[in-house]
Length: 288
Length: 199
Image (cartoon, chains in turn orange, brown):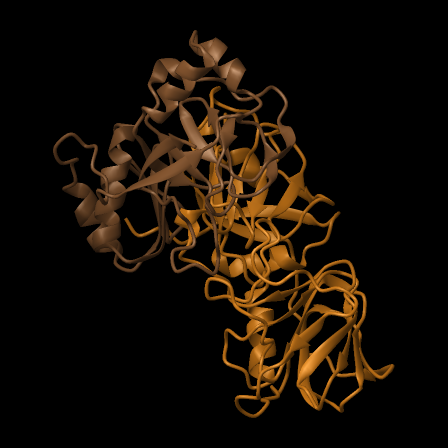
């Protein structure tokens, strides 16, 4: 019996993700990796995996997988129904699947992305040290499709159920640090902080795109392309800000006016089109 | 030199002259481990420096050595190119040259990779005389052939794979600019000297 997960239905978008492949941005390679770090790391802990083991990241509609052998899995992230052979199973806990059993992670009720970790991790070939699918450059394994077979490694250690796995609350409040080009906006970050923003439907793993007031420029002309960080809040020529996420391009020619606090980026993984976002100035000062 | 914080864990360093970026990048690469070190056309992003205090010290005392035109190695990567690009005649006309003269101008230029971006392995190369700058296409092409050698502004670039593109096409190379399985996946990396050859 081969340790593997067979994809029966990938939903709207399902990819293999791990902690990503930083360190190659100077070659134009996005860091990629799971969008909701806390949820992914919890899933790995639950099944007894090392913290960086690869797993499935799903979007909205969920995913349906068949166990090719006896496997232990865990589902975290969005609040979504979990079914094993059609019967309700626990979210946020290790689940034992018999060979041939079908796991279904249903549409997300709250949040957007679910994580399915399996004991042993997904054992697809790594590219530049990571098994993450980069939806911008195409590096890494292809997106999951019906019929995809995901090899699973041998289990590393025992599954570890937590006493209580709480569903995280998405409140849409994103703390921001100063960005390098805030002076390119007529009002600096004041309007960015004052306005309520709506998550746009074309948000994806590259960026959380926001709609709302148009942020006017203080200066005309172009910015020479410069390196981007994860969580950068960029304002392109249409004046609508976006938050760069894991598959962000390595350089950009539009001003970055703020950077979202790393600990708040998991929310960007779970915010849905139509949700409201507000930026909040980070209270802690950057060490001089 | 300006040093802009980018969140709590990164710094965008902007030397007084874009020419100094190469030397600054080389010095930072040699001395300061970090999560990512990303040169741009006029800046270097230091993302996740292991020792922010050491970074501050290095920057406080930094000035470009010699001509400020340092490159990391003497090696020159030759890019054999078939000069049959869709925009070659247009570029030659803009330069006031014949096709042959335009090709000779391009092959006669010593280029350096300033930075990479856009897609893995795409290198932005400087070296063309400023008066030869050409604008991008008004409307980018939906598909540019893999290996296309192209111009935009003063920059020359090579498209590693097929992709949309707004740069003016001079020709094509069969060299594999990007191979994820290779020990050095990108052929053209920041600081590399490049020469385009005909054939």
